[in-house]
Length: 486
Image (cartoon, rainbow, N blue to C red; front, side):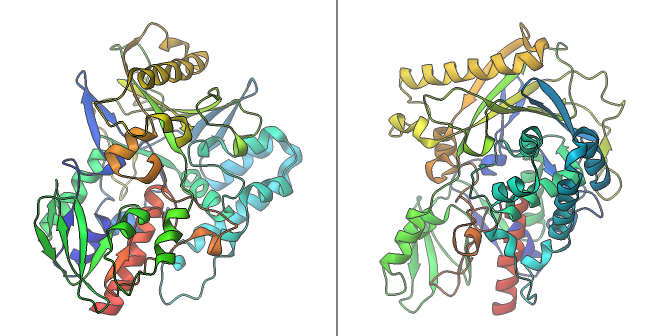
């Protein structure tokens, strides 16, 4: 959708084909007991003017949404019985960490310098005229942290915002610092959740003369035997012809749709099928009893494992690391756009009660692999029992830090990597697409180019995870198309 907005603004006629009947993938929302629940979008960093995400949000027409800035102490982290906070703003971030860990000042300063450097060069990564070489994609974040810090508590604390973002020893330093960077600049939620973003994107596409069609799952790409895709065929039998095509679904699924022809060698197909995927997420979505639990304008991170980088998230593992997200109370009206100053909670939220919260913990696909042949609405009882047990673990841990949860839960809903797989079509239900690895070529950054001259890949599997990665990839892909085709 961000690709479509960008190309439509450049004067191109665009059409978005969505397999599901609901737009947005992990950004879609749904209602239970009259309460809106978010599927995957919870917070994003750096959206205000002068911050990292602002230029791309402005380009996509998302800068004037009702953004809500989280508190300056945007993360409350609980580690080994102690409570710590991460603060927004480079200076406050460094100052608060140094105050809590005075012996680690040199490492903290080195981290801030790296974060500033990453922020300064973010758009050079997608500028086709730039010669910027991103060497930090081949530096493992965990090894860098081990080299620069000694305190085990601080090492864990630096992972507090990344608990669910596929922490592995091979995660590139660039990926790690880029995500941390945006949140440190300031962290935001949006009123209405992911649906607000998706509805605006659709509005922008259609206002520019484009089309968005749901229930149109592409089942086949058709070529001209001369290196071009000429049309795609959807599940309803309709064909759509175009000059250029962008596949924003998982690359392995995109490759499977490509026709058998001389342009596609078997090694190309095997490459994407063999790439490891990021972990999925187990989410407990809790509808709260009215006016019982106060809204918290921050993220709560709980790190109970000895090493967040190598934690076991298999079926038999116990829940140790999780994030607690409060969704913005419904029916408020005091938000501001990123062009002015996004609403900061301060005292304006102090008497608000939360409608619902999400508890999230990583989960390997192996944990739900025994039920991989089942689908939504037709799961066996042992799968349901597994989810209930995991949900109870998550709630028991969360209640230790939010005791008001006890006796104030109205309803519980859960999702696993299987849920993500069935609703978003991502391989193995991975939450962040193909895993980024410093040990891979270019740190695992993938080219949007394909063997077909007018077919391109997009999405978070290519560059970075999450909304930031999707936005950067969209800018890169559309820059290529604009340079080569018009």
